[in-house]
Length: 273
Ligand SMILES: C[S@@+](CC[C@H](N)C(=O)[O-])C[C@H]1O[C@@H](n2cnc3c(N)ncnc32)[C@H](O)[C@@H]1O
Image (cartoon, rainbow, N blue to C red; front, side, top):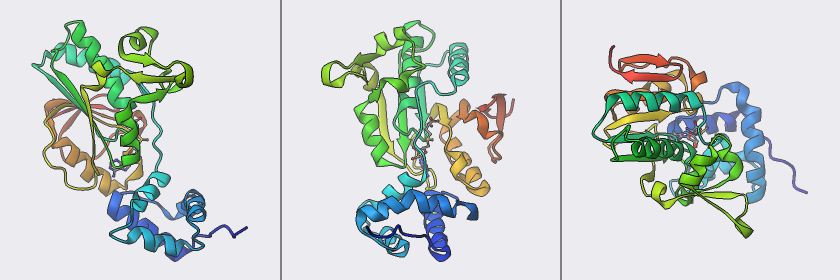
């Protein structure tokens, strides 16, 4: 059996530089073993013995999508429906109070789409109850086309919907039977209001807004302090003044140049109170 490839210090530096330049990802020196263990199986799969060769492969302009595979292996796409439920409760209250003519929301690191569809379920229910305008839509974006392809399919293992009530499932989901037992698909009524697209938060963003609500949750952890600030300011250019901005509850107060008014843990209003 071929030996397991070992990541050298210089190759580690090459990886961290490339990941920072292309996806904004930051890896301190302590992460050498992590990069080694996450990527070694991929090298073996490709029949490569040396990390230097893999680095060379993903650095080529025509890398056949391998850089994306490496980014996927080095980040986590973990997500589930109604993660951090306090944010959805707050969103419902705030939107009910605001009476906007329409509501547009952006899940800016959407992963498999759980956050985008959770938001869609909430907005659909609020609209049915007459608490928001019937004119609403959701956009989900991510750097990874692998997760986006899955998001468009809108099919999930039931476990990911553990925080979705039975009534919500009945209203918004199709439940799989036979070979599809244990899977749930978003109802077309819901998925037709949710779009997905690829977007790297570390590159300039063309005008895709303005949005009334932006989720940027559980992605800032991958960036260093300077990149976090740039990403947050860049994302906030797409939020209307007075719009709602959510980051992960554990991500604390993010330093940025755009004025924000804290509302609750991980929740802010764009602008000064
Ligand atoms: C842990 S998931 C967060 C999913 C969801 N927001 C949540 O809170 O459940 C992080 C996502 O960030 C994405 N990501 C990492 N770097 C990115 C970048 N530079 N631009 C856009 N998305 C990125 C990853 O592909 C991954 O799907």
